[in-house]
Amino acid sequence: MRIIANTGFQDGVGRSTTTAVLAFMLMRHQGLKPLIIDLDSKNSQRMFFQDLKDAQLDYSTEIGNAKLQINRGRIADLATVGYSLTNQPPIVNTKIFKLKRYLKSLNYDIILIDTPSTFDTSCMLGFQLADDLNIVCTSGIEGLDQVENVLDKLNTLVKDSVLSPSFSTITLNGKDVATYKTDFSYKIKKYYRDFTFQTILKRRKPIHDYASKGITERYVNDRKALKDYKELTAEFSKHYKLEHKQGIFKDKTYTEILKGTT
Ligand SMILES: Nc1ncnc2c1ncn2[C@@H]1O[C@H](COP(=O)(O)OP(=O)(O)O)[C@@H](O)[C@H]1O
Ligand SMILES: [Mg+2]
Image (tube, rainbow, N blue to C red; front, side):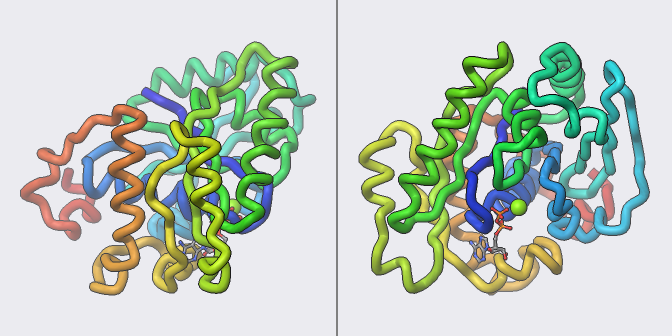
């Protein structure tokens, strides 16, 4: 089971949206069981999953003094990590190693980590827990800088820690309608050819609303807006060799899945 951190050192590039929607799509269309670890102080992941918004803590455990708290959700489970880890000096390999080993022992098909927009101690924790980095960047001229910025920080971590992820993929997020005119995604695709997903996510109103109302594909507009993410999920799955377990869900309606009858 793979642990993938979605990262990018600029606010608003789409780390949280990509993390949440990927988890949603992997569950809905491939029948996978995702765990999301929210390492951003804004706690934004909760808002994408309305059943988790006001959820009480389901489960808390201590691994080598590090507290891991997990809320069970209908689409994805959501974990946060206690202060004792995120406020540590950046390199505490033993604790993080134990936590990573514990995470790997859990019964999930994939773990997605949402990281903060700066290379702080929470972010370093995310990087050390992850096997792979998926850099989320915008498709404007600033996209290349965003990628290089992450790679610089990754290099510093590689020198200091025995635990570091591989730079594996790049997800391109269209910045806004205006910047489609100055689309530099082709440059990113050229420089990082083997890393960049072909799909470019477009800005769509329903996707924007997921950050406050929760993800749904109930309405036609949602399904249209999710088309890019569906393509991205297919590429993502192929790259990370994720299984398709959708047979389990084949005969079940969305409502049944939401009721937790799976
Ligand atoms: N594909 C998209 N379509 C529309 N709005 C988007 C899309 N991706 C992100 N957004 C919006 O852009 C803002 C920043 O996205 P977010 O995922 O929170 O970025 P980050 O976590 O990198 O700061 C949010 O308001 C979010 O709703
Ligand atoms: Mg975020």
